[in-house]
Length: 204
Ligand SMILES: [Zn+2]
Ligand SMILES: [Zn+2]
Image (cartoon, rainbow, N blue to C red; front, side, top):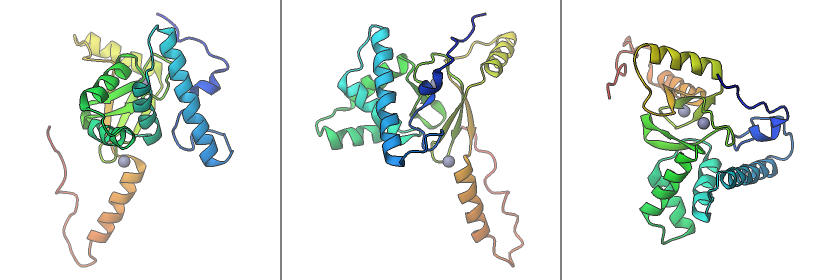
């Protein structure tokens, strides 16, 4: 069994463009801009170490994903790219995404067919992803033991995972809240209907 690389002063490595994650109590914009830049610099160094290049287009796509902070569809990335570089063609963006995927810098979120930045750009060991099916919020749980236990069970059952990603479908706190608000509005005081029956299971 290999142990995760020990990183005692890894605090810098854990800063990613996820709003308000850490104890950097500086001005919001500045801190986030700095985080974004340092995340990009980290990704660049990581690629260099692997003998690969974070070309400007790859860097830009990664930057867009970092800035969005959630899972984003390829076509919205393409739209954003076109606002910056009007001539951007789909294959360019797809190739950049492929590269970022193979470098382990981003995840493909199968359940909503979108892409999200890996929450730890320098750790090749991915966590377990919890994905909001409504808004694309992604949380990566870094519990190597939990992950390992899961993989062991899966293999004991005779399976091999299709990829690196372990993805759980969910509804984030914000979306739960807005759903509850909607349900409250919908539930008229007099109406005796049970509101939960309608949207139970959708098989994909
Ligand atoms: Zn990851
Ligand atoms: Zn959500």
